[in-house]
Image (cartoon, rainbow, N blue to C red; front, side, top):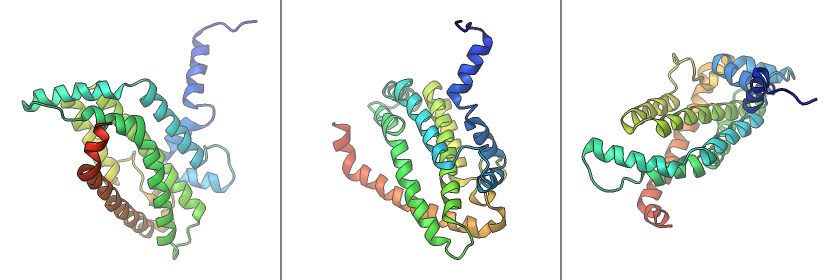
Length: 235
């Protein structure tokens, strides 16, 4: 007998789409509220939460699906070009279309994966004196990167659906929150939130790795601005 298209059918469909039954939504919520519990659950062999690498890949898949197939970032960028020029009374192109398409449709996920592999190597090297296993570092790095994807996704939606005058300030605020991770902002958890017993020592390790990654990214940005921009935009 065919199943009727009632309210329960669509609720179940939405749950499947967001990974509710598989633990995706619960993992996300508890990573935002109590990440130490998620890590302890992994240690005990409990399957309540999605494992860190799988969680990262699933979040990446949702990000790619929405940004590559449902949002036309070239058109969004052109709209922001017009908004920017009207707001600041300027003329000409500001290349928002190219930059937004490159970031959200093409570069963000592979670049993030590349960076977290480098960070994982760095934190393992820097924390040899701490009693923290490589498995714990894998969980912390991949879960934190997944939260970064989530907040970047939210940032992208503000840029995609709001005018430049509203979307850009919200984007800056969200980016600052992700970068500086204020301790009192409950939705962002630093590394020590996963392993509270290591406290400031663990924060120091991750902060040192973040500084080195920041220098690396700044070098890439400078190389792009000075060397690659004219070549890539012309492709």
